[in-house]
Length: 430
Image (cartoon, rainbow, N blue to C red; front, side, top):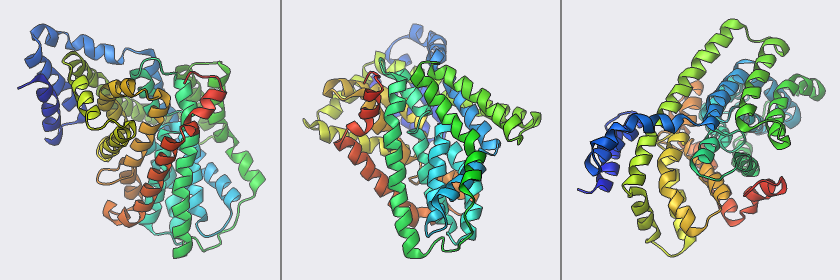
């Protein structure tokens, strides 16, 4: 049996047995190296594992996770909802638009779809129920719009992509993800509005908050994306430093401006963020073994050659790759998909000459769709739990945002400038 079959076969067998993704990645890599190389290579696993996470840019991941959690607890979401309601006003489908708008803004703070979904759903679903929106519909729209957090900078998935793909400027990726993220939000808004008007959702006039007062109350939260992206654009700090600044600013907002957090809240946020970050880092470290095994044994090159042999058309290969990523997004989290798929996809990118920044955004868009596409759908699991409905009940509603976002992916494929125009104008390397 070849080492290629051992690596991929053992990975899928361990994964379907119910083991965590990190265990499947690490153990399958060790098994393949043991049979394909020798014991000396196995003895170096500790070094490989450490080297996978001993990278300065990775510090940004736990810091942005912490940032998102601080802003979630500091009452920023509630104030953003108030501002969005003042902008949108009372109308059919109005609260659905508010939820989408708040998700887009919150995505500029957390970089995580599930965190975005939890923060917005907690605030929005009770209000949507009062105005006649079904629980399943509300959960579906919030889950879909929260998936844009993987595109709106700062995105944790794009940070991982920039580390794994040599030569990619993270600032260019952040800039490239902005317009596709807004396009994805628009794609969710269209079916949300059409369905709301046809079904009569949100017909109750619950009033309109004063715009000026709402804007002033929301200013501290609105400044967070400005500080992060403005600091990156001006060169004042690196992405990792931007994450540290965002944490510090979030603490100022929670403790002194909103006064919604105390020292116990800070301890709880730090502990919870540490737990989530530890899971992410364990996955990244053990994925290093899997990537080392696949590279040294030639498994990824062989798999890439097989995919390229299916068709001579770059477009056919691209659609096939996008479909595989979308299917993976239905059952795996975004970080895991990047760690598993990128070693395989990099030879394909190099052979077909795909722009690395453009492809990174396309990959993120497909992962985003997977985050609210059953059976697993991590965002939908969060919002359905908060709405107290089974995921099965959301199927009739979530189908349309899925179709709409697939259409937005098609637009970015057909018109790469949607992603590449802004980083080009800002002078970043694309």
